[in-house]
Image (tube, rainbow, N blue to C red; front, top):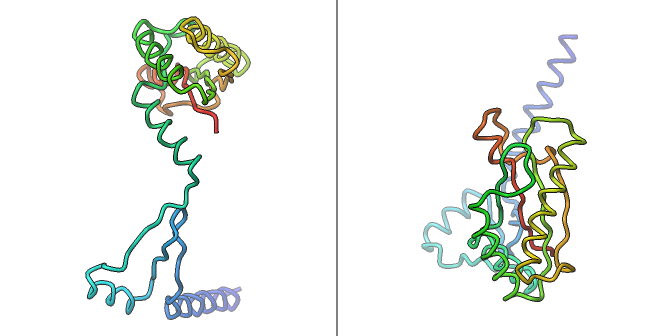
Length: 185
């Protein structure tokens, strides 16, 4: 048994030594077209050139860029409303948020959204899925009452499956009792 452990240890050391000596690989950075070198010699060269040759090009398509910008704007106007415990009517603070969302959606007629209904960790899975659906539907109903076409809004309930906070206290539960508006791709 000791011989086998020594053999594996020796293989591990050899593997690491080989890995350390062949660091002249280039690593592709996801979402960018430039490569980052891991070679010590190349890093020194880059330092001497004062990073003049570094350029990162965004590979996102025009549609993806527009969606990203629209998502950022939606977050700015407010992408979520909150609910009290065991309630499917959103809090009064949510009215202004939903009015801003409605103005945003009316100004951007080409996008569709999904309203995600969420609950806190208490209660059964089935009950929370139904409550999350009622919460999402109450937001959808309010947005349509403000002039957003119903066909542009879909709903989904996550119940307690996608908690917004993993802590187990009232503040965390309050963060999870929400409906979040997401722009569809």
